[in-house]
Image 1 (spheres, each protein chain N blue to C red):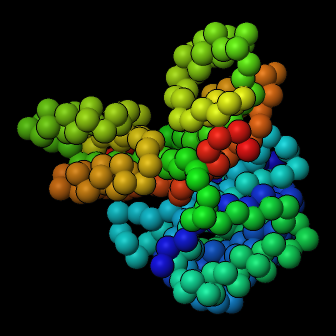
Image 2 (image 1 turned 90 degrees about the horizontal axis):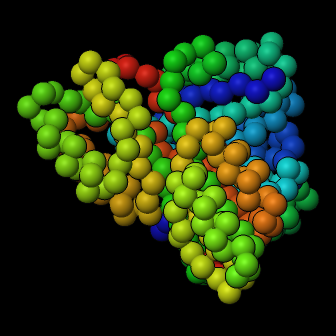
Length: 159
Length: 159
């Protein structure tokens, strides 16, 4: 199963290695990870999507909670949260298909961020269904390269 | 100094741990990391921003290139690329400041994705200057929580 874990960790060398090693121990596959700074320069927030057995992911989560540099761990499956992902896609373009492609970009509110001689590069932000939808739609035109941020998430409400 | 490295790696358990351990060895601090799937389901793309001595980062980059699961490594400092980052920010809101806040959101093209009783949550995508600009602007209103995706990037042109 696929689970999403959000963690706040002290921002210092080696913390990511220590955390990812814990996942490796249980052979749990990290499908995506987004790690960036927070409002506190000493703390980073990581959002990790992981694939594995439920009991093993529970064990990993408890181990993360016990690590000294880790300030907080949330299992997002159990909380209400808003999630978003950013994707950039470089897609093949020929003159005949330009109109169709532009329509797809408009429907998905994807923004053009670059043009080559044979390709066009767009960015889009949305929940994962929307990101997967755009990718599926563009696959038929030929995806040359792609970069996904991994899911980021914040709890709903004021907390 | 801050350097940005983009890598394509085979998507299997333990690869992230192996990679991040290499950074840990040299005490290089990973400031942000975005890891997600690509157009090839067997390959993930990672974009890593790292802070450290130039010579050490060169050594780390060479070590990454030699790892079996790693397909390709690019030093983005040396290539032309388009970069973007996604941020979600939950900011304190009171009735008197709503108008001002909405103007800030409009200028930065930030979209409202959630409302609480005392807070409003927005998302924005842009290059890192733009993301830092929004954060600096909202800091004065009180940032309750924040999640950044880390930089993602694709080469310019058709390659």
